[in-house]
Length: 60
Image (tube, rainbow, N blue to C red; front, top):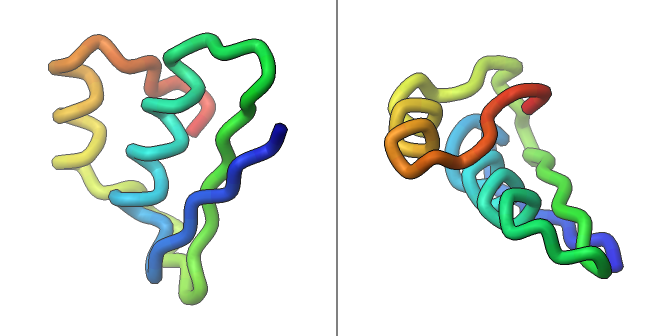
């Protein structure tokens, strides 16, 4: 099942949700993220939090 996480800029919340879901290695679920007005830049604090929690951040 594909799961799409949406937020305004696709720079933090949806990126984090996608990364967390995909890090869970659930074979039946694949996370994706998008934004209604994407900024094109991932929030550095979001990346830092993901890395601190050992969440895979490559290819996001």
